[in-house]
Image (cartoon, rainbow, N blue to C red; front, side, top):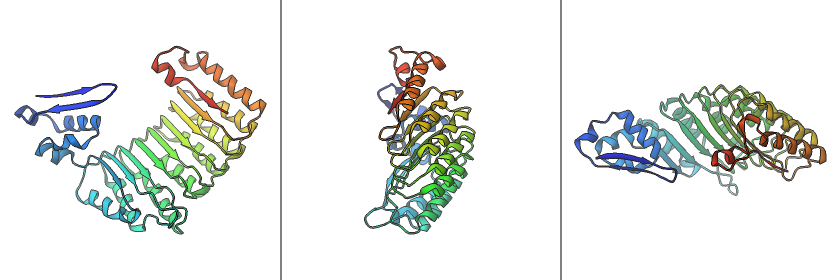
Length: 316
C-alpha cells in the first residue's frame, strides 16, 4: 500500500515496495518528494533512489571545497530541486570561495533544469581581496537558472557595497520565474544607491514575496525613498523590511508609507528601530497601519490565523 498524509504539523509518507508502487508515474514520485523534502523517500526502493537521489540537497562545506561538491552534482546529472549550500567564509582568516568554485556554481545554475529553490549562504567574506569579482559572477548567473522559483541569499558581512547590490538586483529582476526572494544584506556598507537598485526589483516579472534584511547599512532617507519604489510592483503580496541602524529620518519614513499603494499587497512589515524617525514620521506610519487594519485590501481585525498573518507590523 502507499499513501501520503499531509497536515499542518508534519508530512508523512508511508509506502511498501509492492507492484502498485512501480505503476506510479515518475512525476507523482517527484511531487511527493517535493512535499516531504527529505532523503528518506528516495531510499524506498531502487527506482525511487534512481529517480530522487539528491533532489533535495543540503551541504555545509569549506569554501575551498565548493568546486568539488558542485561539480559532483553536475557530473552525476542530479535532478536537484532544492539546494542549500552553506559555504560561509572565515572572517578571521579571510577564507573565501575560490574562483573555480564560483565557476562551478554558475555552471550548475545554468544547467540544472529542475532547480526550484536555492538557499545560498556566503557570509563573512569581507577579508578576502578578490571576493567582489567572484561574488559578482555568482550573482550574474542567478538569472540563468531556468526554473528558479524561490531564492534565499544570505550575504551578511561581505562588504558588498552599492556595486554588488546593483549586480544582485540587475540579475534577479531578469529571473523570469522567481516568485519568492529573501535577501540578507546586513553589514555590507550599502548606501542609498544600493537601495535604489533594490527598488528596481519592482520590475521582476513574477515576484510575489520579498523579504529584506538591511540591518546596519547606510541607506539614509534616500535609501528609504528608493525602497519605496516597490509600491509599483504589480504582483507583490508580501513585503518585509528589517531596516535597523540606517540613519533613516522622517522623510524616509514618510516615503515608506507610500507602500500602501502596492496593488496586490497583503502582508507588510517595516522595522525602523534604532533610526532617527521623529514625531511626524511616526504619526504617518501609525496612520498607515490603522488604515490597513481598518479594512484596506480586505485586512480585518479578526482572530483567525489568516487575519493575523496579514496584519501590518510597524516597529519604530
